Length: 354
Image (cartoon, rainbow, N blue to C red; front, side, top):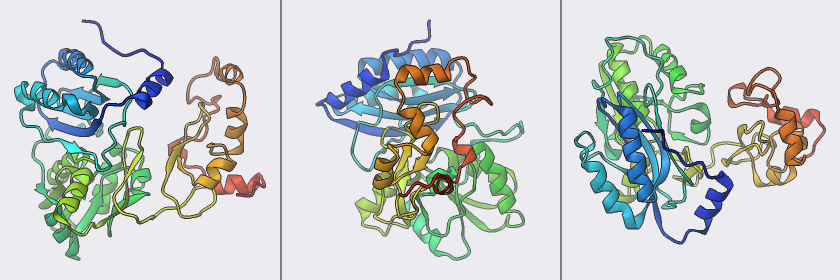
């Protein structure tokens, strides 16, 4: 069977989503489980979910499934029933987005991957199913209150920058693959300490907890359902939220607010702000924090160079990109996340007043 996909222009799809009058749920789920034929399953699910008008980003591998989706409320029960017909996914728990805005994805993308979470682990003796203890919101709060507990954020630097748990160690890393060795080094000599971990929806900290146990750590726990489920339990049970700020999410919303605390600053002017944006220069798309004032002044761009390029007619922009290898040495996209440019300094050097 051919690899099924939606090839309609994204501008058209985004407009269709904007014009929709139906309600949607933004949900996420994952499960580490052996999948024999991920390609066949991928196409089966694509057909089923397209018929149900579902959108989202889904990864399938031999080790399991990882999905973030937008499901029409009217099709929710059918969606759940159809998924549970697969014995490997029976009773898989769903995390429902906090903000209730189902317009989080505009198309359905399902990809077959080597792993549902790229971890860089090559040790054949590693058992991802030998995870640490699940902790609910109350248990996590109690653990954090113990000064002897070590709290680890298993997300990327730009995620923890806008929201995190109190006293958490946040690795200065861009990927989960990079974080694992950083965390192990940070915890070196503390194998007998109580370690608890968290991430967005639980999938990264679950694998990380298994990796720490593999490395000899004795008392490892992880937040069940991640920050998404934690926020839901905090609200339902009227608990104190020890997570402060915004929970970064990988969809059109970019973030969902958990508390009113603003723990970060605009990367351009330095004023308190926790709104992420992507540079409007299509040859850059740097993810950075930008306040409304700077967004207006810089026209949604990260630097004057990008602002100049983004202001050109689209055909001229395409000519500039033509023939160059994306992310290569001749590419205009010099301001990528991993380079973390000092935007405030760049603005200053160009004598711009923000």
